[in-house]
Structure formats: C-alpha cells, structure tokens
Image 1 (cartoon, helix red, strand yellow):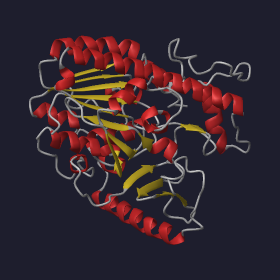
Image 2 (cartoon, helix red, strand yellow):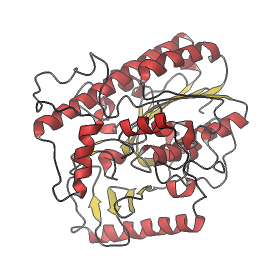
Image 3 (cartoon, rainbow, N blue to C red):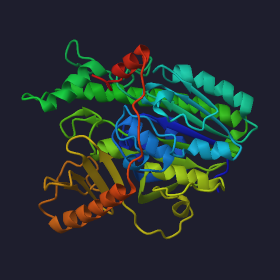
Image 4 (spheres, helix red, strand yellow):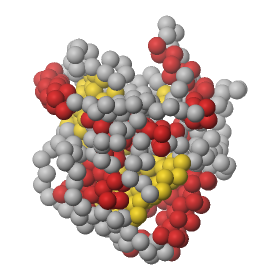
Length: 421
C-alpha cells in the first residue's frame, strides 16, 4: 500500500496547530495544506518526548525513549537498536538523509542504516534543499528512503526575507528584543529561579509571528522539492510523509521553546500521501510519532523488527476498525514526567506523586483548563494505565548507552540551538 520510494519531510519544532490544514488562521502553510489535501492527515498525533534526540529516535526506531535508550539529548542511540533506514537498507533500497545538524548529527547515532548521511551545520533548507534536488535528479528512478530534516522553524526564528517579516507588519516589540535562543533561554530557565520571567504580550506575538515566518519558509522549500519530484514523475511513485519531532510553547503554560509534555509541544503534524495522492482523509484516532516506522516498513512489504512498540497505521488508513490505543510520552525532567493521551483526555505528571494534571485535549487543545479535580475517576484510570506502561518499560530495560565525544564546533552548534549551557 505504501511502496518505496519514501520521502520524509521532518520539520523540527513544528507544532500542528500552526498549520492551515490543522485549523490555523495565518497563511503559514499553503504547500503543506495542498499536500494534506492529497494525504491521510492524522489529527491527533503525539510525540514521545519534548526534545529532538529522544523524539527523533522514537520516530525512526518505533520504540519509546526508555526502550531505545536515548532519553537525554546528549546520549547516543545504541547500535543494538534497529532503525527504519537499516530495515530499508538491508532490503536493498538506497538510503539517504540530508539533516540540519544539532542532535541529528551522526555523533548521536541516528545515521544508522543511511548510505549517505549529509549533516548541515544548522544552515537550513537554503543549503539542504539544493543538495536534495541534485540527489533526486541522480536517483529518481531507483527505490529509496530519503530523509529531509531542517531546523528552519526552530528558534532563532531567523528565516530569510521576505519570510522573516511576513507576519510582523505593524508589530512593536520591546526595543532590543529578538526571539532568539539567547533571549528565549533566559525566559525558559527563569522558571527555576525565585523570579520567573515572562514575555510581554507584544514580544510574545512578535515571537509567534517570526516562528510562523519560519514555517512559511520551510513550506516554500517543501513546495520546491515537491514540484521537482512531480517533474521527475516521483509524485506518482513515491510515498511522502510530513511530520515533526515536537512543537513549541508560547507561554501557554508559562514557558517558551520546548521542554515539557503539554500538547503545544507534543501535538505534532503527521501527513502520509500514497503515490498519486488520495481524496483527503482525516483520521481522528490518537496515534504516535513512533507509529511511522512500522507503517512504512509494513507498507513496503518488509519484515518488521521484533519487539516494536509502535503500531502500523495502515489499518486506520484502510478504514478498518482498530481498538483505541493510548499515546505515551516521557521526559526525564521535572521529576520524570510522563503523559498519556487516550480518547478525549491527556493525563500528565510524575506518576509517583499526586500532582497530576488532566486535560480534555480535543476540546481544549492548548490544555488551559485542568479538570483533574472534576474527573478524578478518569485521572485514576489513566494513571493506572500509565503505571502499567511504565512497569512494562522497566521490565524491558534500557540498553547501555554512551555519551559521544563532541568537538568544539559541534558544541558551539548545540549551544546556538539552546541545547547546552
């Protein structure tokens, strides 16, 4: 149902609700919206972690962070874990990735199985895009797995003009304010101090507008690549996936950037377009980012690695009746918080204590109203399911991991993304 070639657009830090096809009012995503009009669109897909390394590793292994081992950004994905690229490579497909550095660098292990793994130094799609077009020219007649990843949506929110200023007309931020990593990190880290800081309304709206300009820039490049694929006939032959590893918070829960498990961070876009496209189909079941790996493997008719925790989405795409499944996310920070999305509800917190939060995410997608006191029986049921899930992770165990040695340039690149102190 989903034959190779497979092209994955992986737009880091892209929250679902800032796209037109997910209901956003600002015109950030005309080409993504057009892609959605030929795709299966998963309305409620959730990431397994709030940060790049753990979440990306879950997408490409079909495992939770505790099971693939990369629970912290700075760890390396173990060689013992099987990746999507390894499955396709072992089956004889050409595999290539053009990624934007950071925690997607090969030092962190996600390059496993890629014949070509070309990492930019946070230079974005203006550098990556032309390399992708050239690669497609050379290999469009072959069967392949191609990964295209960029940080163009990530802070500093410094997309090229005219995109950077596309949505900022008439705005008057505080003189000297720039929504870059340096300034946003001061806000984010202040919540651990005695005097937590907040962006004022004008600066917050300016930051959102600049973020949205980055989306529009990534959308522009996606359109260029899709047009090139169409010219090569790949639109009739390739399966196209668009997704993100996590979103971005704009003070919905008192912070900025991404470090917690609330829906503005964990709700991700997920589009799957079969060759030739389809009449648009919206799937409202709760699904997980890590379901992409088994979906693509099964869709290509390849054997699934053993002990996967993600589930193929093909039955949902075929319209079959599928038992309701939860989506789980985890973070080692803030007291080892976990989250479970199931049905209408999202429960999150540290399961060892009673300070849990419960949200009705479908009717309250920003999760602004905690209903745990009103629905204690729902909270108790989801907490029990989350503890069972945690127990299963504990029984399975975490593989041995290592922390890679990083050179000075890599450290500087990670610091620029706000990932190192």
